[in-house]
Image 1 (tube, one colour):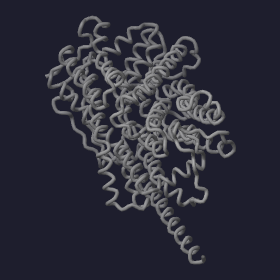
Image 2: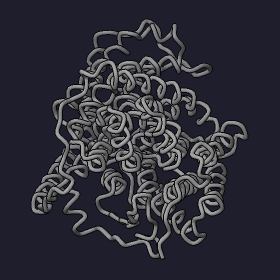
Image 3: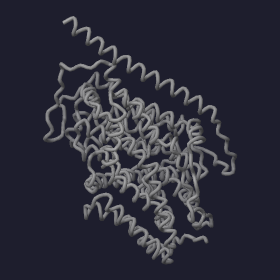
Image 4: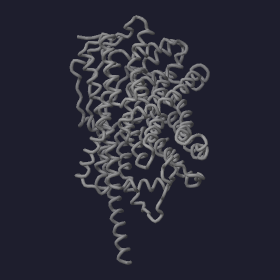
Length: 592
């Protein structure tokens, strides 16, 4: 028996929206005022959302519980799978002692915390967002910064804030692909529009990050490096999004800004090295030197990670992996049972893509790195168990957050808030980014937010005479600044930054900055809609009934074969280099 969503349960949109926003206000209250732990706040919000869905929206109890369970299942896989794999990869690097070499390498480039944050949180995090997305960038970069000696709160907070500008083009452009599918606006047009909004934020973000860490005066000491980082990233993001499409802006901008900043730091150094208060002065033992082979060996887990994630992002590889490693099923008594306001049933198909998931690529990278790092596989298994214990509460938090996201979506609570914002008339372009922000806050994913609100954004813009690409792109751009305070992201960053149980501190650290950046984007989109209309790209809407191409898995097998050859070659080169270095050291000892 079907159940139809109720969008306006009180027949008064303002009142219905006020009730609909209660579960979100509960999260803010629990984390900011009551300072609850993450799992406590998320469980409380989920419970209240279920009660509102049942008592106010009339959702059957069984459907409400099944919807929440579906979200919990999605939280466990693929989201928690990514986090477990990412933290495991970092843990084996530390256990092997190789992270000490990475720390020495980073210090040789710069021991200044401000510049390390730009290299790792901003640029490397962007690269990871472009290839993996879904929590992996924050998990890996936060863990790296803590390992380098960063204050854990700043490490996690800075990585969350840095993970804004790249989110729109994350996971090889999937958020924009989904926005295109639901709005029938070409991917390229959305990519161009987003690429004419976010680069402005990308220029400002490095300065914003450094100022958060060290204050305005100390930020000015490294202004040249900040400008190199921000402008190189913004230019490459703008160029690739406008001329190459949505798949590569983060990858190109991330790598490009790393190269530009490292080259610049070879020619320029800050007068003063800045560290956190009460942190020991930087010390580099100049008597200790590492060969290129040793440095590459220490970085091998992240080299493997980069190659694997790029390969896993290629569609032919995804196709072949899904052909042999995908289990999917309709959620019993939930699939096509809920009917939306347009009379369409909502599909609930769970996909267990255990081979093509990003978490699997990260795990395989870690497994390949274990012998290279000098660990036994027994030690690797022990570290995996340690990682699971370390992430117990974050896993509970993330699972309950996704349960929350599913129940508010399936019950119609989210659509109530969206409809209320859509009733703002000519001011809608100003509020369009708020919808994206809201969607990412709830679901933790810009992709999900675009799937949720993309069609509504396009329809509302058309009704008020605004080009729909403006508001659809605004949904994408607004969503990126909601990522830093999404309970899912907070849980990931807390787990990686050794702040489990202190999620409220991290939330309070980031929430103000999320609102500041959201307001900036809202004003920018309003100007794009009515003043700077020349920025809007020309395009033709897609035919929603166009034929889908059949995947060619043979290409995927060739890619996987090439991947195996590349990884085997790199592994062999690292092992040979390490053996040669040991042999050379032995000969030197005999000579002496």
